[in-house]
Amino acid sequence: MFICCKTKIKKSKQAINKDSEVRQFSKKNEEQQVKEEKQDQDSYQEQKLKEQNKSEESNQEINNLVNQIKAYREQGQFKESIDVEKEYVNGLLSEDLPIIYFIEYRWALHYTGFLQGKKKVIPKEINNNKILIDEHKINDTINIIIDNDPQLLPGIQPEKHYSLLNERAWKFIHTLYGGGPTITIDLDNVKMQIHQNRIQERQHQVIEDKQQLIVQSLEQINNEPNYVLPMPIGSQIDLNNDAATATHITTTTAILPLKISTDSHINFKYSSKNIDDFDKTTPSYLTDKNSTVQTNIQKIYMTIPVELPIVGFYNPKYYCYMNAALQCLLSISKFNQKILKIQKLENRQCTKAYQSLIKLIQVTIPGSSITTDLLMYICQNKFKVTQQQDSHEFLLLLLSQIQEELVGKKNTGKKEFFHSAIEAWEFYKGKNADVITELFVGQVSNKNYCLKCKRISEVYDPILDINLPLQNYSGAEEIKLNECLYSYFKEEQIQDEWICNICQHQNKYLIRKILVTQKPQFLIIHLKRFTQFPRNQKIQNDISYPEVLNIQQFCDENIIKAQYRLKGLISHQGQLNSGHYKAYAKRQNEWYEFDDDIVTKDKKDRHLSDKGAYIIFYEEI
Image 1 (tube, rainbow, N blue to C red):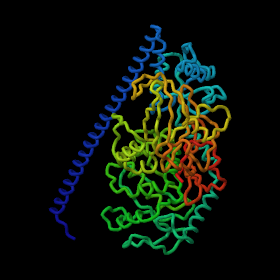
Image 2: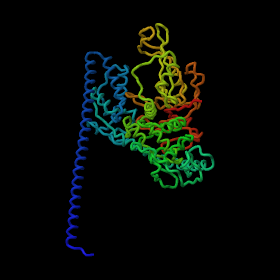
Image 3: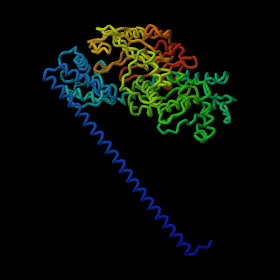
C-alpha cells in the first residue's frame, strides 16, 4: 500500500488528538478522585467530630451525676443518693456497648450490697491490683489481649475474681469511687479463640452423621412423595405450569438456588457440602422480575406445604444466638406459610428478609449449610456483629419488628380500660390483626386487691412470652419448670404504693394475682438465667421441663383446655461473657439438633434432657 506524506501527517494529528483526549480524561479522573477523597475526608472529620461531641456530652452527664450524688452524701441524704445512683447504674448497664472493663469481684459484691441497702458502708476505692501480678500493679491502664493473659494472676476466672462492665458504667463508677487501674480486654480476640477451639474439638465429630443425613434425605426423596422440598432434587421444571414434575433423582444434580431478593443489604450465600459440586450460576431469566419464568416459580412457593428441609447455618464468629433462634422459628410451619403469603413487602424489610430466607432454604439441598447475613440487615442498629448477643433479645426483636411492619407502631401513650378480658383481647386483635398476634401473642390479667374497699382492680396486658425468674434457686439444685410457673403465677404481696382506681385509696403495698386470659397457639417461655451487674452472672442450675405442659391451673376459668407439646428449645452452654447457643427443633416428625452448620438427628432424645435450657417453645395441642 502506498502512503503519502499527507496521510502520515493526518495520522499524526489524529494520534496527537487522541493523546490530548487521554490526558484530558486522565486529568478529569484525577480531579474527580481528589474531589472524592476530599469528600471522604470531610465526611470522616464530620463523623469524628460528632463522636467527640457525643463523648464530651457523655462525660459531662456522668460528672453531673457524680457531683449530685456527692452533694446528697455531704448533706446526709444517703437514701436519695443511693436511689439516684442505683437508677443511673442500671440504665448504663442496659446500654448496648462493648463489655470490656474489668472490676474486681469482691469490690463488685460490696457495691451490690451497698446499692441494695444490705451494706451501710460506702465502698472504698476500686482495687483492681488484686487480680494483677506485681510488676503490672504500677500501671494506670492495662490491656488484656488473650484469655490467660500473663498480666493477670494465674487461675483468674470471670464471676469469681472479676466482673466486666461497659465503658460508660466503668467511667461513672470509677469517677465516683476512684482507684484502679483501668483494665480492658480485647473481647473479640478472646471469643475468637473460644470459637476456634470449639470448632477444632468438634470438626471430626459429626462428619459421618452429616453424610448419613444427606444420603437418607436423598433416598427419601427418591422413594417417597416429596413433602420436604418445593421440588425434588434433579426435577425438571415445567415453566408453563404452576407445579414441578419429578423425572429423576441423582446425587450430583439439584435445582439451583434462586436469587430471591435484589436488595443489596440482604446477602444470602449458598454452599454445598459432601456432594459433588455443580454449576451454581443462576440464569438471568430466573432473577428478572418481569420474566414469566420468575412469576411461575414464585407461584410454586405458594402452592406447596411449608415443611422445610434440614439445613445448617454457618457461624463466621458470633452468629450462634441468631442461628438458634431462627432454627426454632423455621420449624413452625404455620408461621412460615403465613409469612410466604405476604405479598406487599415495600417498607417491610424484616418481613422481606425472613421470607427470602425461607425461599432460599426451600431450594437448598438437605444436609448442606448456608451463610446468611440476615443479622447484619435486621439488627444493624440493635446488635453489634463483633460481639456475642442474647438469643432471647434477638427473637423478640425479630418478631416485634415483623409485627410493627405489618400493623404499624403501637401507641403506648394512652392506657385503655376494659370491663372484661374478652373485651380487652378483641380490642387488641382489632389493632393488631397480624401473624404474630395470631400465633404467638397471649394475654394475662393482673388482679390487684385493694385493702380498703376489698375490690379487685384488673389490668389486661398482651404477652409475647413468659419470663420466668430463677433467682430463688441456689447451689446445684435442679430447677423444675412447673415449679417456676407456680411461683410466677402465685398470689403475692409486693411493696409498692398504688392508688385504687375504684375508691382512690392509696395502698402501701399490693396483693397481686396473675392469670392467663388468652392462651397463644405457640407458647414461648424464657428462663432468666442471666442476672445484671453488680453481681453479673449466669444461673447454671440444671432445668427440667416436660414434653407435655399443662398450664390449666394458671388460666382464667373461661379457658377450658390449656395443654402444650414441646416444639423447640434454645440451649446455652458456657459462662455469661463467653458461651454458645444451639437449638433443638422438631421437623418432619423427627427431632434435630442444630449446632450452627452441624445438624444431626437427635436419636438420644437430648431435647428432653439438655440441662442448659434457656428458651422453650411449646405448641398448643
